[in-house]
Length: 198
Image: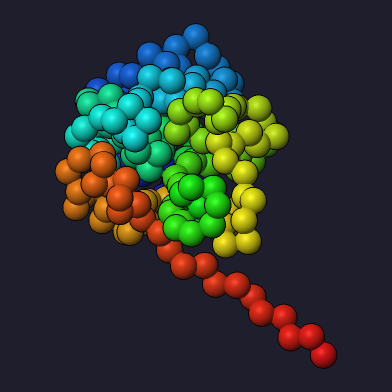
């Protein structure tokens, strides 16, 4: 579990501002699920999604997301992981591949989190921010994510990464405004297993 607790370039939880906020969120809470839920709700509801609110600058590192108060789903997941790790709760990054316009190509990655809870094991949460048609919640053991998988070219990746995918940080580092990122959202190809009918 150590790698899911480490502080790194993008999940830089040892910065004083993140440590302070993490402890404030966790105050008067003892159970890991209560702390995790409070961190999740804080990021979901207090950090504005860059595209939803048309906000700059583009953020990536957890400390920048907190400082600027905005981020794409990927950046918000970095901050949530940082707050959880600052409270000693293992947290990782997860991804889905989704249709951007919900009707086929083009596709993009969507970033979310997995948190390790003592009573439930790994549990995925999505702090991208709710809006009409999006209602992500913290209800272990049942997942209530922002987006369902509805298309055969979409994917719900089962991996839990301890650090962001390079394609994600490349996009967030290359583009300076929310609309540039929106026009160049990261994506990866999925490999499908072929079954030969005999």
